[in-house]
Image (cartoon, rainbow, N blue to C red; front, side, top):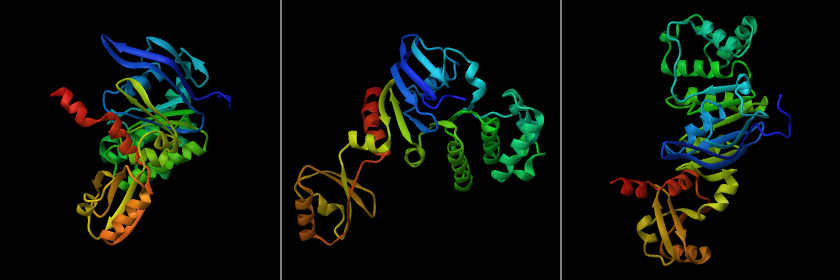
Length: 308
């Protein structure tokens, strides 16, 4: 087991290039033991390269990578579970046989793997499917089987790349609860996702990489405090057209029933002026969501103009 004071993963000034393309630039980060650590970033930002270096599938050009207290070796990989974004199972195998096989790859005995697989199948509502072939499963069922194959050996570090992609709400919730339980049981989880709302709900810390550089790293409160201006969320009788007439309103975001505004002036003066013009049903100060911060950093409008 990894010592309590040693992080699950530590990268120090790590860089990786592909020819002339700098995929990861001088990256340092620390994944605390027993946490859910979110990896976010646009496609092509360097997330997958970073994950593959943590797994020692790729070697860094410079810098150091420590995984579960070890540096520069794949010896720790038996203590790691990895669910890649590109799913793949042996379709002709039966569910239980497949899970026993994956358990054996991590050093489990057959009886231990069968017992653990049975418990997971029952937990995720697949107890009646243990003797079915993989090809008979729905997409959601197969995705849950691949998740079980990732965690069956009780890994200390679990790396999940878009684990909820394509799942219906019921299956998504059962998988989410399982991930939280794994954290409670002591596993460290690196969770790569494009779902900003899910990252906000689940992650203890969030790391964002953009064009190979770290641009966010911390808990959500820290990130919200450091990036972005507080906004006012409100609902009025007059709607967004009234807001356009009030001095000090810098930006209006129409959310349908609600609007969000950013102000350059005093909030109390804004509320007084608003109440003089229309009936106010809802008024609260909000911090920018992770989605808003992500979009602001990635700036798709700027990206599209650069690529035209």
